[in-house]
Length: 303
Image (cartoon, rainbow, N blue to C red; front, side, top):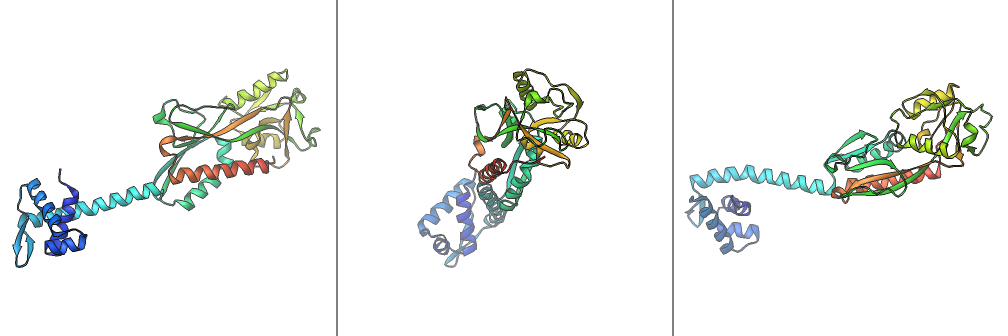
């Protein structure tokens, strides 16, 4: 394989017209330049330069190699710039996996921060509830719901963002609508609207809290997502219980009241692949996520 550094020096000699001029341009001694050119000639098995007056000029083989070197060195420069861009976060891609309610509440702000800071970075967003067990299938950054004190697998670091308590979303005309909190057991006789068709961890967490309160909710309507369920509440069809973050988009005619005794809570984490943890886009994304999570605590979303 040809030595790229020697090619650079040889190309400088051809462009400069003499070893001495190339040495001055490169900041080398003439002796060092001559040694590199001689080594390149040995590598190629070609006579690349011939004396011409007080300087040198390329042979036919040398000129052909110089022409080829121009393309190679230009491409190499592009690659070096590309690597520098990757290192600084100006280009490349960032894969973010998220679940529905956090996507609606947080991602617009996070993506806005990323696109403003790194307009050349491609963002690949994937909606999923699953945390892949295979490390090769994991996104660079995944927003996930898990139990408190969740520990991810090797190669991934979990950053706790928020403990999200559940609320009961009820019609504003409901007798409990003016309360500061509602005990779960007070909702036993209500017409419940299911809001998690996937039967994910958030729903299981709610059912476990209901069991702790001594009952199992009777779902009269099954909706596939939080927003649809809240819209059904606004239509007077029933009530639904979901994490507070799921009420990011208020529906007229509804109110969200915290549920207690017990207080079901889901923990939200940012799972970051260690291999990309120090890259500027990931650092920026994590900072933006922490900011929106803190804002969610300060300003609970109304229903």
